[in-house]
Image (cartoon, rainbow, N blue to C red; front, side, top):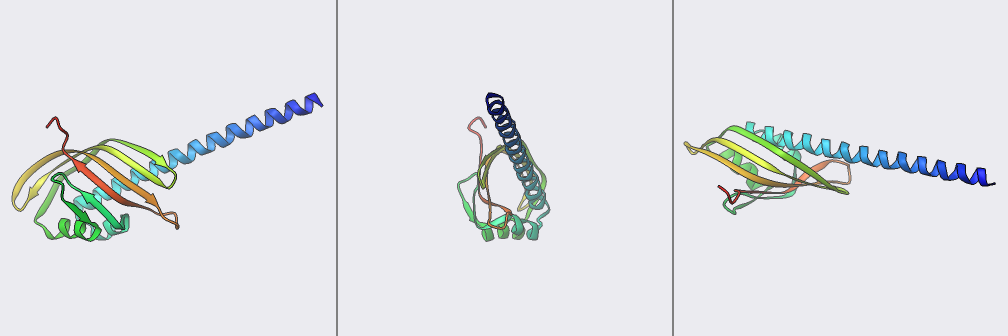
Amino acid sequence: MHHKLSLLVIAALAFGALGSADAQNRKESAESKILALESKWNDAYKRGDVSTMESLLSPDFVITVEDGTTFSESGYIAYNTASALHVEISEMTDLKVRMHGNVAVVTGAYHEKGTAKGKPYDSRDRLTDVWMKDADGAWHVIAAHYSIPASQ
C-alpha cells in the first residue's frame, strides 16, 4: 500500500510538472503571437495599409499620442491615411509582454522619423499597447498610449 501511494504521489508530481511546462509554453506562445501582431501593426502603419490596420484594431480602439490627443479607431486610420504623413523609420525596441488571461499589455520604446505636412520630424517615445483576445480567439489592440520620456 505504501509503495502504491508513493507511485501515485510521483505520478501526480510528474503530471503537475507537465501541466506547469505546458502552461509556460502557452504563455510564451501567446507572447510571441502578440509580438508578431505588434510588428504587423507597425509595418501596416508605416505603409499606410488601412485594411491590415482595420483587422488589428478593435472597433472601440483608442490611442493617446504624445500631445495628449486621442483618436478612435476610425480617427486614427483617417489621420494616418489622409494627412500628408510620410514615415521613413518606425521601429520598436525593448518590448515586454505581460499576459493577463485574454489581455496582453505591451510596453517598450518607439522611434519614428519622417515628414508631416512637408516638415521633418524625429520622435522617440515610450509606448503601452493593450491587446485583448475576442471570443473567436483573435487578438485586437484595444488601447495604445505613446508619450515622450521626461529625459528628452
